[in-house]
Length: 139
Length: 139
Image (tube, rainbow over all chains, first blue to last red; front, side, top):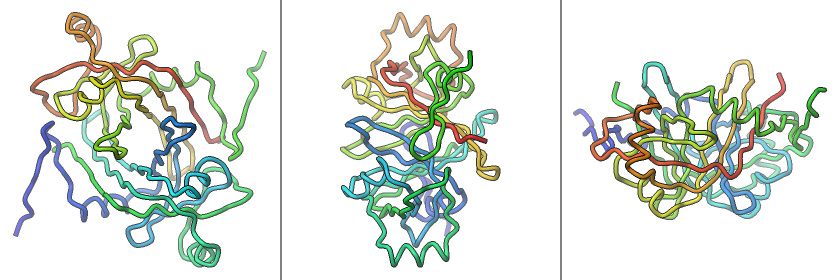
């Protein structure tokens, strides 16, 4: 049986959770959208998936503080072909948390998590997916 | 005289406003980060620059409502080479507004603003840049 295709008011295809998770697995870099000093901020992060949760490494700084506070954040991945006007975007929304040291040690052995820059006080941060949504421009 | 190079605590190069604006001009698609039902949401948009303000087209829906409310939002563009571990990201933060019809008509003649899908009630939305920040991974 074919899945029911759905489109939003702008004509973009609404992707189901299974397709969102598949696309999330297909890329290595995403954009963490969080709040810094009350204003929205975006940072590129390399990430891995542990089940349906997103895991990435961080040194100190604003990302770690957001995780310690348990902030609700968004994490976006996409693939765009601006020339051919084709693309998709998937966004996960949920709470950040700091991964406990023993669990982090286990994840570091099984998951290749490069950071964009050398980190002095490397910690792992987890985003527990509570909402997973996506859109695709029909080709 | 060489500009002073600056790096953030994670070792990423902090880009000045002039470089951010240059990079913003180099791409056609960005990510609008706004709030939908109290949660962060991300949408891909084709955009143009009118001075240092970001202009894009929208039909009705959440983006237009955010503009009518004058929401503070973020708009992110980037270029990533995940294989070679190289990239930059630029984020503009400011208030959204709906462009008045006569000004929109003028902009539509001078700026190629494709939307990702056909729009029934096409309106132009402007993001007035109040903060422009960027990071680059030193190659």
